[in-house]
Image (tube, rainbow, N blue to C red; front, top):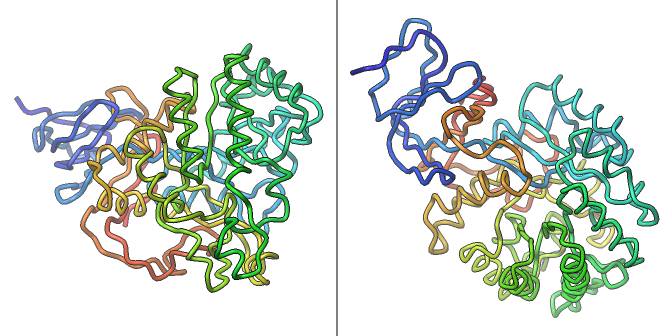
Length: 432
């Protein structure tokens, strides 16, 4: 018997892909009061006069994307971007939840900063923002931050970003305290003394270009130290932005040893290598640096075999001046919200992955890592939904980037798959 709606939103006849529930079928979705109220076979729910209808007959419907690392530049660097500008850009890119690292200015090391960001996010009223708190006060690596207060304020985890905690005893204590309060630590593995001053992968390309290199050991030594302390303290650890084959291998071994670890990779690390900086292209200046073709293929394989649990944008918007200098003097980072979904779709075509497996890496898997209620289309779940056209071809241009940062090496690239609608907490916030 047909169901007749009187209100809410109806997504009709879309190809529903929900990796969390192992669903890949054509269906109708009814949304009411910001939640998913019903999922029924395609064309079985009838709309009433007051129902908002989205015809998804030619479209793919997935949970809203969850990006586990995106820098929004506010507070502190509003000349580059703001929470308002970047959450709007995220919504238009199908990303409904962003995780902001604590290296803002001021640092997210006390509840007042968490409250400030929450207020600005609520005022923007677009994609949701969750935060990591600072593992050490001011990210200086000398004293522990107010870990319990940050948890009470709503931080989903703790990180020192790429700032060093040189004293291993302090790092061990930080891990132990985090474990006590059941908080995950997020590690961007970097041995400071090996990477300082570097701007490219230490190898033939950097040597030829006269650039100071960052060796793979800067990543692997940091991973090794952290894994030893994870084993001793029992803290759950997430290793973010892996860049090397050796780093991925170490995470594989740690998982085989049943250590409580997860990992992610930036989308650009799955498509670019050190060769892309050959013409001193500052758009490819990232940290960790783009490494070798072997590293790229190893990272792709690590995504396929599950060593790498999530793919993030590692969004870092910059103003124009930040990239207009000699390569080594430019600021690292890519504006990458707009390319997260298209690069993942491209990856699924290049490697032997089902579309649902790739969608998993940008929806329920990062949501599970962050410990948040997102990334699924379950009945009763928040209605955070991305609807895209899997077949639409388009080209990335400055005009098509909604982020205030236009710094990307993917300008001019042709992509397949375009976001058409984004729903956040039941509200249709973007519709093309």
